[in-house]
Each structure stands twice: as C-alpha cells, then as structure tokens.
Length: 265
Image (cartoon, rainbow, N blue to C red; front, top):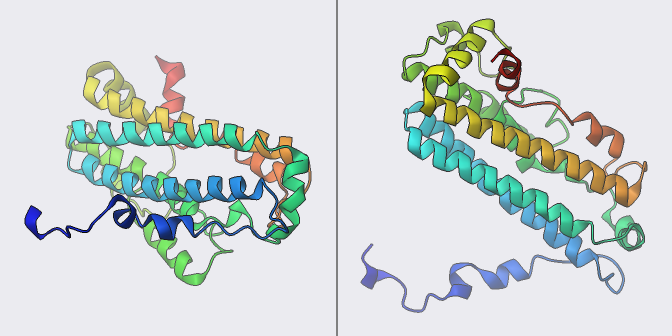
C-alpha cells in the first residue's frame, strides 16, 4: 500500500482504538472502590504483555531454527526486557494495602489469574508439558494450547539452532515427540559445555535464555510475595491454595540444562 492510499483521517486515537481500550475497565464494586481501577488496569496490562510475549517467543523460535543469531539475540533480549516490566508492575500493585484490596475482593467471585489462558500459552512455548495445566479452560483454548505443546518449544528451537551450527545434538532428541516434557540428556550437557568454551555466539544465545529464565523466576517470586502481602494465607479467589500454590511454582527453572552446567566449568 502506498502512502497516498493510507486513510488521511487516521489518528492516534483511531489507529490504537483508544476509545475501545478505555471502555474496557468496568469496576464491579459499589462506588466503585477507588483501587479496583488499578487492579483491573494492571491485569489487563499483563494480558497485553503476555500477548506480546507469545508473539516474540514464536518469532524467536523461527529465527533460531533458521540459524539467525543476531535476530534471535535481539528478540530474546526484548523478551528479557518485557519480563522486567512485568516485575515492575508488581511494585505498583503493592501500593494497594490489604484493606484496600479486600474492599472489592468479594466482587471478583471465582475469577483468578490462574485462569489466564495466555500465560498457559507462554508456559507451553517455554516447554511446559502438562495435560492438566489447561484443564480448567474452555475446550477451544485447550485445543490451542495443545497445538502449541505439539511443536518445538523455545528450548527445542535452541537445540535445532545448535545443531545447525554443527554441534552434535543427538537426532533422537531433535526428532522426539514434542508433546512430551524434555528430559535432561548428558550428551546435551556435553554440547552445552563445548558451546560455552568454543562458540561465543551460541553461548550468547544460551545466556539470553538464562536471562529469560531468571526473569521469569523473579516475576514468580515477586508475585508470590505480593499475594502473601495482600491476602496472607487465604485461599485464592479461583479456589486455589493461594500463596501455597504459587510458592510451589518457585525455583523450577525452565532451562534446567543451562543451570546444571554452571557447576561444571
């Protein structure tokens, strides 16, 4: 499309659908309670960032599989930065006291962040393979997550990238059933050690993945402490165990092999 074909009436407001965007915040509490607006906006913002993370992870996977080092580094670096933004949003939520949150918590009914379909998609792209993780979601969403889980995770794409650069990743690992959870293999560990010693560009890719893994774990930790600070040991609104459930997700690295090699240098 040429520049002359663009709608001359297009504005910042119409291009970004600002009117539609600003109509999506609909507090349910009486009044409404002042802090419910913050709660809604923060969580809507998270969903927008999850959408962008899905977009970036899918692009990163394709870039890795074609062996494009520089584009892969750029995309993985962007993902790392988005995760930092997700962490800083916790700081904003923590300006809300327990009393302020409880003033409208009852209106949330059974809704819960546990029900975020997009975050489950992010987890699937990262390599989580758990048939139960989407069982509470609508069937069409379950199908979408199952489709993501049937193809390369970002770790599978990284192994394909290393193979493309001549590193000896076993064929049975590259061709494995991607709907199953990746299992650490000593042969891959040996390749990763060699990569860090002899292939600086590939090592940079691995370090970007470490940044992402660390960023995700940091976000999970901050999320747990924010929830504990706000509701203590109460059950979650969606019926989960609240802090107890969230704490169970901590310290579970996404790229375990990259952590394991640290003690072998």
